[in-house]
Image (cartoon, rainbow, N blue to C red; front, side, top):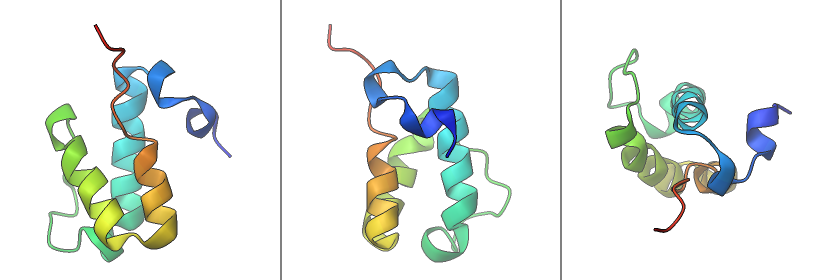
Length: 76
């Protein structure tokens, strides 16, 4: 298991979050994102798209993985 997966969302940096989102997009592309470009680079603005796709089409594992992408920003 990677160290990124063990960091709580509240402590994950933006860069780590983007790396995780891109990794999950590639991992679940055929199952959840088949309609999107194969080489799509996930940006901060596209993270909700990845979360939604994982929750809707990713099954139990995708749903759990989507929780890792939830907002890492601390409340002001």
